[in-house]
Length: 314
Ligand code: A3P
Image (cartoon, rainbow, N blue to C red; front, side, top):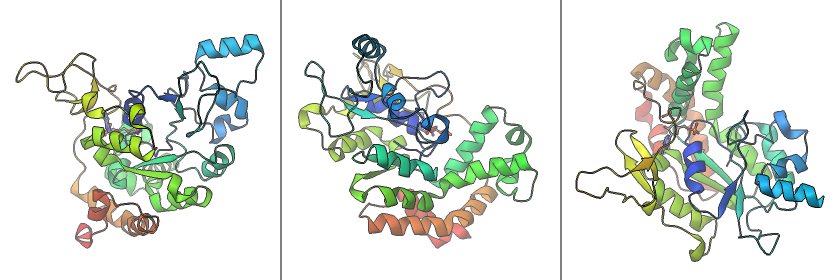
């Protein structure tokens, strides 16, 4: 699950694991749930390090005692368990930094040529704004001092503002990044998910994803039974087991476990000026994305139909 950042990757990561078939990497203090192996930070630690991220601590202890190769337990999607006592599992790496790193596609395809590549896309203008809010929440000096309008138009500004502009805008150059992944993976292994649909109806996205990943009926769960809308959060959240999706009494809210405060932040809507600037900025790139998706037989997210209409530019 390659990103990009701010498109709902944490929600997809969390919800996927409600089906016990899906196993992900262990949390790390520095990168949380992400491995970020195919970028530069950890790549030179090698494949054994990477595969060891997908083992539970008790597996690692046992392997170390048996002096076995630590990559033995890892199966890329489609693989079965490597050891008869183990339940089957599909392993996934969610690292939202991969999508817009040109090296990541090449490196991932060498190590995991059979993997499915899941890409979440939301309107890149919304993604840019969410990234700006994320930077503000993390007290980034440029984001704290400048408005969003100032940041996105900060072409000739001082380096910190320019760097923030780049991080707001460039991951949203979806056509360019997707083309890179298509150089290294066949289109049948690329799964595009509309992040706006994930936000509005995660159960249907996850139920469909289980089908696309070709799971047997017995390996699937019905996500409509394990997710519920949380009024207070304003997002879908995991239902706490035993609770009903609609609450037990009329007017009652279901008991849920939501993502933390850093996911689904509260902030004012984007200004009309910023929206117009970004509609123009992304227009040609969004048209190119629509062309690529059509060529590979993928349906177009509804935000992309809006973003490529000429009425957005005036
Ligand atoms: P905002 O906080 O700007 O609203 P990522 O996990 O890739 O960093 O993406 C974060 C975004 O996921 C949030 O951005 C939010 O809009 C979106 N999101 C989608 N579904 C969500 C959910 N069920 N709970 C919380 N955030 C969700």
